[in-house]
Length: 81
Image 1 (cartoon, rainbow, N blue to C red):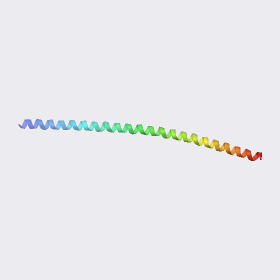
Image 2 (image 1 turned 180 degrees about the vertical axis):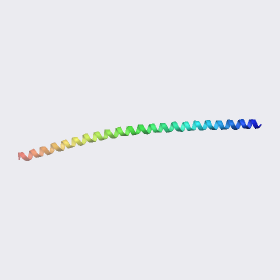
Image 3 (image 1 turned 30 degrees about the vertical axis):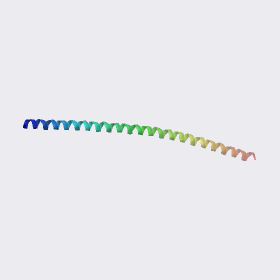
Image 4 (image 1 turned 60 degrees about the vertical axis):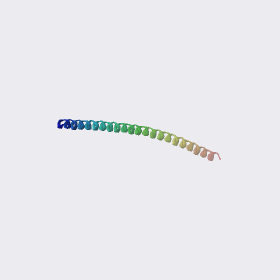
């Protein structure tokens, strides 16, 4: 009976170790997946921010050109009067 109990305790310990290993591997895989999603999100956000910045600069440039043209036209109209 003692031998049976010893074998059972050994098996129980092995089962516990295996379960812990599976849990640890699952947690590690989940952490890696979360990190990959976070990295991907950072890249996407960075690309989106760069595009918004580029479009903003283009809009500002167009507005500045229009303002400059308006000032030139105003100046020319003053000279002709």
